[in-house]
Amino acid sequence: MSPLLHVSGLRKSYTEGDATREVLKGISCEIMQGELIVLLGRSGSGKSTFLNMISGMDAPSSGSIQFDQTELTALSDTERTLFRRHAIGIIFQSFNLIPTLTVAENVLLPIELAGAGSKEDRDTALKVLEEVGLADRHESFPDRLSGGEQQRVAIARALAHEPRLILADEPTGNLDAKTADLVMDILERLVHDDNRTMLIATHDRDIIRLADRVFLLQEGHLTETSKADALARS
Image (tube, rainbow, N blue to C red):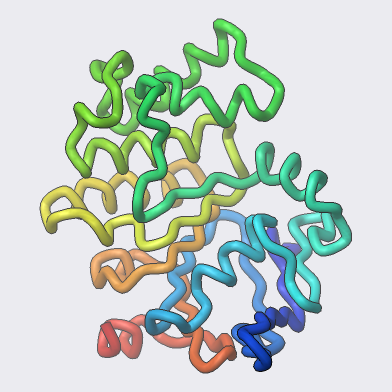
């Protein structure tokens, strides 16, 4: 079985004043369809940079990112944006909901950006909200929701256009333990019941326990580690 995502020799450097800082130092990995991968690393280790490379929001300094049959590093900025709108869903720690849009409109936004937005698409948005238990809040605005509810809307938004890969950056980082458990249950169902593929940057021990595999990003290098070692680090 060929991987959904194949990363090879990925490097990313930033210029800071007169110095150059290399954040990613030639990392490589493969992710298969239907896997839940956890990405570990200290603050500043490059986890968000790595996710940004995979999502196409930022270009690597060198290396290859192949998404199924598409070489992302060969695409222009515009082409990467269009590809992301169709193939990748993103869940942010800070939710990133648009305050002037209702819950349903926030969820519908990725579908509209991908060039759709019909009555059937709105029905799809409402169905996804039902999956995360918020169908009854579709006309509410984000500031009327709790943190946990906002994150569930963010998950629904990431799923609305049926992406093949979901990237999540500390999705339970701003939530209390009970709400984090609810969000975690949703994420597990998405991967293992719906055969989604997900890469999660997290230190949440409960999410680590659900992982199929765990990667550790340290000093610019990526290695695979066992769940036992990952839990000992968290």
